[in-house]
Amino acid sequence: MESTKETAAPEGPILCINNCGFFGSAATMNMCSKCHREMILKQENAKLAASSIDDIINGGGSGTDTGKDVVAADVIKPIAQSATPAELNVVPLQACSDDSSSSLVPEVKAGPSRCSTCRKRVGLTGFNCKCGNLFCSAHRYSDKHECPFDYRSAGRDAIAKANPVVKAEKLDKI
Image 1 (cartoon, rainbow, N blue to C red):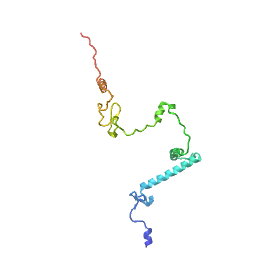
Image 2: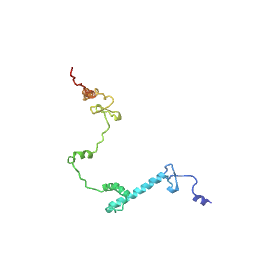
Image 3: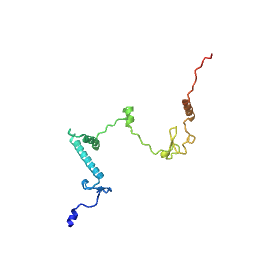
Image 4: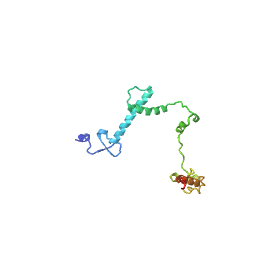
């Protein structure tokens, strides 16, 4: 009788073998559905990678590739090709046109934002002035950092723009 107890299925639920906390089943190899789905996707990606690398090594593939395989191969080919040594063509920056050079030059990430006067790190609490500089809370006012921006003429221009001069046409007196 002891042998029949050992071969019988356990009475309680089975936890996932990946220890994710969910219950598994025998149909999904004692894994929960999420872990089983991830394992299947990893296996498919490994097969696609192996087949695309074989195509690269063998010099191209046959015309029987499906659309899914072609997309995966296009993604993996640049990675595999970058592993092999290649000759780099360096083009001087002056030789490029102005329009294309702006898109080719990567933006350099600036360091930590600092006050333009005292060089204190300001982070998200920095204040942008109309002169174009960034300041801390102590130097944010124009009289504290010797701001070259002309607020008086800017104010005059704003008022003139908001309030245009209205002149009525002269009437003939009768």
